[in-house]
Image (cartoon, rainbow, N blue to C red; front, top):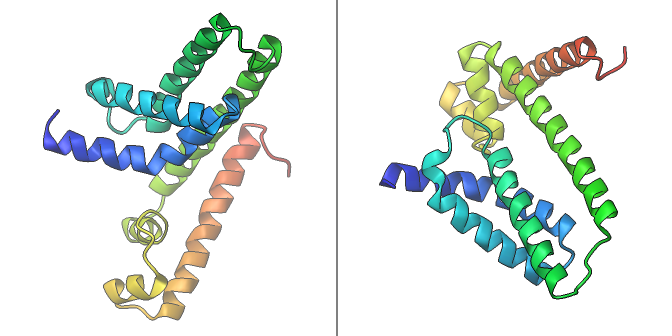
Length: 177
């Protein structure tokens, strides 16, 4: 893997590691076991990162590896006659988590679609605030606006994004109103 891919992998892993760990921990109640599985998942993803398509859902890709590693862990534990969860309960929990992940993926897709409808300046300001975690003061300096102006702009753009998301949700039957 080249240096550019190394940096991309580390960036994506660091951004998503806590969610991956939470997913594993929700299925494996022991912290040490969850940490071991996370380590294995990270190593597998690292070795297979050339199969990942940049721009697609890294978290979804990672959770597939986590899912299979949890299943392998459970199988190994079952051979050792250690019961973790009753299988039907485990399967039910997995189904619930997968539904939540699909909903989260849908919402992220809707947000991305709504973001793409913003003009370039507003999209950049939203990204600076929420992706780069810059303060309104820092953003105001970069755009030559007052802090008050940035707050008003953020509020207006957030309102537009919320309207767009709700409109799509109503169309898809996910929200009322």
